Length: 291
Image 1 (cartoon, rainbow, N blue to C red):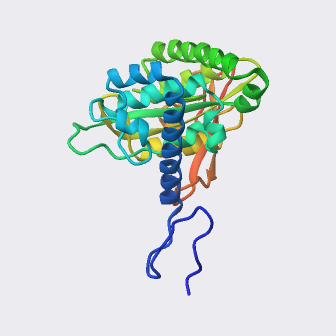
Image 2: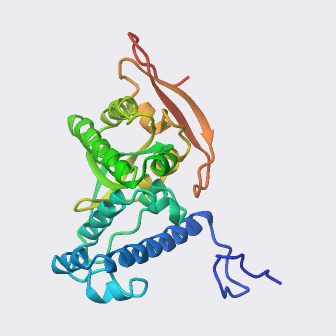
Image 3: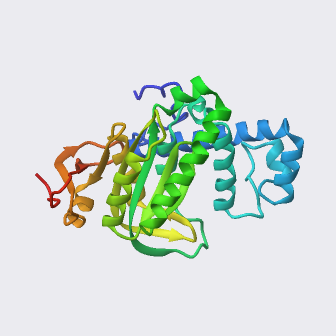
């Protein structure tokens, strides 16, 4: 007989139901997190009637959602991207919120959902880079949400400057996590190395990237490449930049850049091992490919 579900697991599964895959479990966990986040945002707004009325007047939320966030859509008037940007600003003002809910920002940003029905989609080749700040939660607990929010604002400005110079775009941000896209692998590698040096003290930035065809709808980006890039970032330690072999091979001609690897790595929710390389800056040398 099939054992009952573990605490927090899927309930009422019939005995013939297949086991849940790691990818499905990850998507379900992130869906649960988003529901918890919506509930917490609604609770905060109910304590701040002026801000709530402003959000309602802008169409970012509905009054019905404010009263019952777990059972209703956020808004019928604004596209999902607008609501996500608004929530990201809320999280930036309350940096410890995600940690209290039990999931890192990269996990939320990296769970790429399918485009909504009826949206115009375009397939294009992009390099997707994720970053976050190691030690951010502990640092926030020491300095408080207000100081951490100012730190994030400065960090966002720094990242925007580095990314724009390389022709990239910050696609999403949530707390200390950022999802960034670039038109070329070379641009992503150079920007990632620069961002490592520009991390706000005393924190260390970690970065990960993958490249390939993605689906875009307006400003949003979807697909396996997004999901895989976030998983690569999970393998990076603070102060390091890790990329897939696809990125390393495409950007192998960069002067002063070395790729250590590839090393087969098992990534959460990915069926087979993926070859990863750590990117390093080497002074005065022609960059080489893999070793």
